[in-house]
Image 1 (tube, one colour):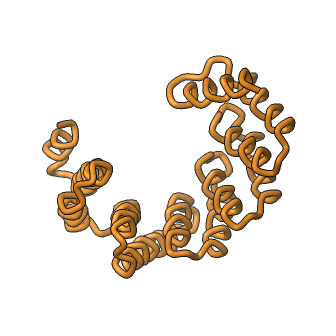
Image 2: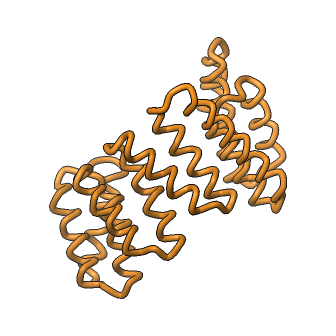
Image 3: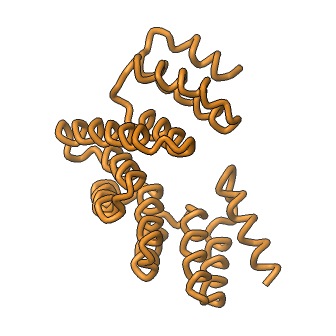
Length: 212
């Protein structure tokens, strides 16, 4: 119902309307209602073909259905949208972030890593860019490099519990539980008044410390 409300209240703003259809489609995908989701994604694109996130989500759904060629095409459209945005504004870090995501989805992790790095260079305060960069490195089994990314990230974003969780997870994967515990302890210490989603992450890390 809230997505219908968003659609109804955004009718004079094509971008907001496209995002509202995108959000509705995303929920339909979670519910396994792919045909209905396709219709919503197509509506979103019809209102404005300039939102990379819509193509990314659409491509992800198509990939989930095994429609590899169509998914690749959707990801390429996301990349094209991002590239145009970057040409217009070399400091558009969000465009770099979305471009990296689409490249990774296309199976081009090396290119994605470079693009994520550029997003971080432009906006070093955005925790999500670090997470995307670190995860891409992890996916290439470049764990030491991923740890360096997360270490730098928490220096700049000490209140982001998710970054600590990513860092600690890599250490655990490397068979270094004692070092992971220290990271989790630091996360809890740095976030005594965490709220919302960050509080959920910190509570999770606290429980992991107790069970060790």
